Image (cartoon, rainbow, N blue to C red; front, side):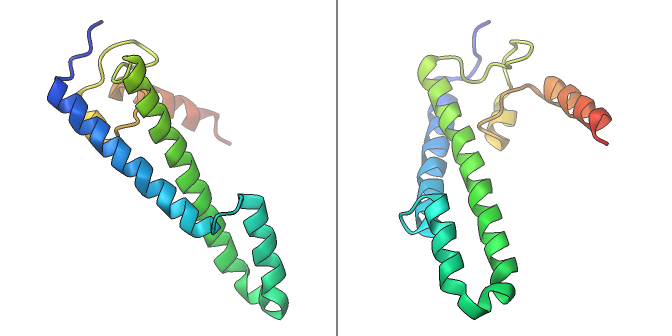
Length: 128
C-alpha cells in the first residue's frame, strides 16, 4: 500500500521527530550528568549521606523521568529509522496508512487507531 503522506507532511513530521530527539538527548544528558544510568544512581546514593531517607522520593521521581525520557527517545529514534527505510506511517498490524492527524499527534505511532484500540482492549482484559 502506498503511504499517503505528502512530501510536505513527511518533512514536517521528520523535523518534529528530529527536534524531539535532540530535546530528549539534551534532557537525558542533563539528568545523567554525562554518566550512565547506573553510574548516576551510584553517585546520587553516595552523595546523599544522612539525607538519603529524605531524598528517596526525589531520586525516585528523577529515575522515573529518566526512564520515561529513554523510552520516548527509543520510540522517536525508531520512527526516524522507519522514515529512512520508507515504511513510516504504515500500521504494523494491518498495513494500512496511518492518517496524518494521528501521526501529527503521536509521530512515533506504530498502529492505526483501530489496531491500537484493539491492542489496548486486549491488554486491559489480560490485566489482573
